[in-house]
Image 1 (tube, helix red, strand yellow):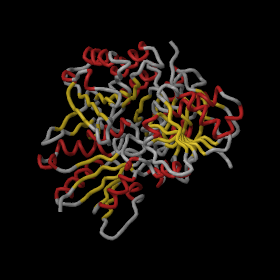
Image 2: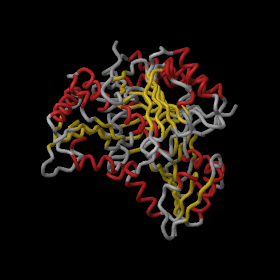
Image 3: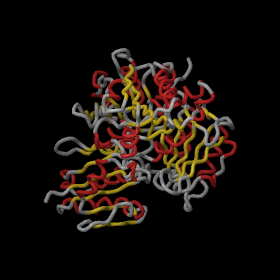
Image 4: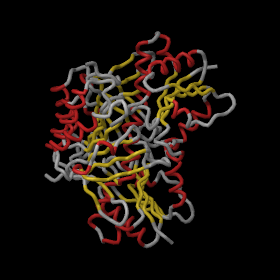
Length: 250
Length: 250
């Protein structure tokens, strides 16, 4: 048996957002590896071994997957969203680079998925319809000074922005600092969207202006979208539409 | 009959990258609206009207879709990739905002898709595995000065970068200026990826260093990914892996 590792994106939650390519890989797998809640999204079946692991052990999980593939297993490493966006793909390649030479010869593929910011943007309209950036607000793996500096430059560039991992129980305060920085640098009517658990039963979308934004509106399951200075709200009965125009006037 | 408009992302090309949600919308549609090559990706069937239009008539196309929905048709506006990333979603909401009040009451939904930069990143490994930005290099709808300024700030922020619409027959020179700017501001060994027509029969991936990059390596169907200063190439037999580490050392 020839083993392989597929690093697959399960999308934000709904079955209808899992690509057929990813579903086919799950069907062919002998082993599923990933963070507990993501592995639990894969239906159990005879012959499929589910390996759940906790958060923050990404490199151990990656090495386990690579070792199983070397032993001939067909391993799918599952991420929420897209595996290449603040998820498992980088961890696997980091493990490959640091690991035994033989791992470089393995069949390793990444299968893209619908990442949280694009699912959230779709629900709101088209807030990322012009140039934008994606920033991980967790300072577990980088100094806060890097986050602060990137935010300032992204605001100066007038990107729309997507923030992943804005706030957690272990990091309750950083996101308040981000809102303070935005208030220093942007107009109070800047559009901000809190998109929680998009496409799941717990989905919740809050569209507001920067002056109304509060740190508590974000948690672990929220992606936050901040418009550029040009982003507009179209009021209507029910949830408004938000979009960023395609044009920048000369 | 109650009409609606769905703005749907067909992904980069392969059937296996179209979400089930988008496939279901196509099955329910009475009308498909879009740029010629994207409409041709939808299988014809009895009762489905295909409306192909040329490039650069996005607003006309959007208005046509909205008018048909108002008349009770079930309209899918198709984009390649994700409709919210340099595609039709913004154009539709722009048309809604400028159009008759009654359009605001229409059932308008955006269905996300696999955008080109994430499909390309997956093929290369995980080059967008840390903070990144997406910039449309076309100056059809914004002054070149805005592009130049955003590029300089994005480089200063040390984002990985994805460039959409890097070069076309009508805009042969801009991308050479972008490469010149990158050469001024980045080390010659900065990783750069030219990903053409990913997931189609014409797919071509070129992974090189900035010093080897030439304008002719990009065309209309290419998305260009530029690593951050930390992006790494893992050499191996065959195509190397490219990834951006999750960590930034203090």
